[in-house]
Amino acid sequence: MMFHSFSFAAVFTLAACHTIFTQLEAGSVTSAVGVGIRDPNYDGPIYDVTSNDIACNGGKNPTTATNAIITVQAGSTVKAIWRHTLTSGANDVIDPSHKGPVMAYLKKVSNAATDPGYGAGWFKIQEAGLTNVATQDWATTDLIAAKGEQSITIPSCIAPGQYLLRAELIALHGASSSQGAQFYMECAQINITGGTGAKSPPTVSLPGAYKATDPGILINIYKTLTGYTIPGPSVFTC
Ligand SMILES: *[C@@H]1O[C@H](CO)[C@@H](O)[C@H](O)[C@H]1NC(C)=O
Ligand SMILES: [Cu+2]
Image 1: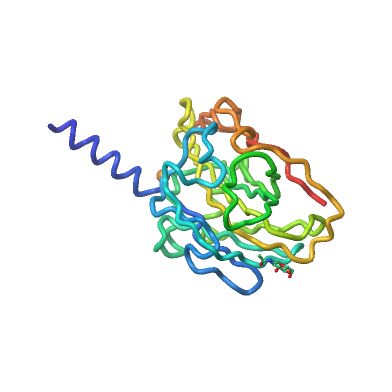
Image 2: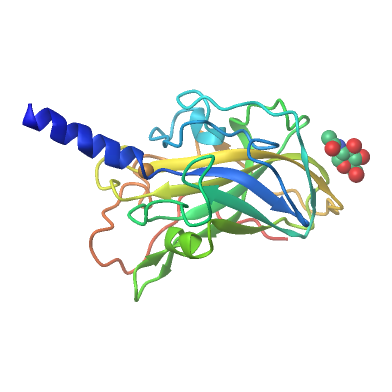
């Protein structure tokens, strides 16, 4: 009996500390929650890097479809806004125990409102991992300090058109056991205007780009690290 209530309390504590990419600030406009981003109601993570849900969430955590497509200027810096829940404020981003990297990817699609996201075509445009070796500060620590605002610069040299913008955060507090890393991600539906199209980024698949045994995914963060290998491909730059 006592054991049962103890484990219930532990589960409840864990459930209280997840996160969602709820809104996108582009130009001077911040989208309303769920407008142009496929947000789930539940803030829990994906654990299986081989699941289609690793691309744009959904499946295990059903996401709500949205018809909106957010206009984004190539070369501009947008902000992915992270919150603990769909209704949390800027002081409730994610539990500080959730340490790990923060990244952003793009995928060119013909219809951003309907493309399922999973499969080929993804390229990484931003990443941060262990941002201060001396203090063992992580990108998630910096994200909390920045009130949940992840700054992402949209490359100026890619083709204009519709894309999915995937903002991702990995929490590594349980990552020393297999399938213990927690992947948080949502996809924003965007229309990039003004891109020159001078470059075609090399792309990867999601699922596919991550392995459960990657050094940045299966890792014990409770010892002093001298470095950290961020999962996935290198960042595309113009
Ligand atoms: C995307 O932007 C282009 C250029 O402004 C525009 O012609 C097109 O209609 C837009 N598409 C969507 C889906 O917003
Ligand atoms: Cu959590």
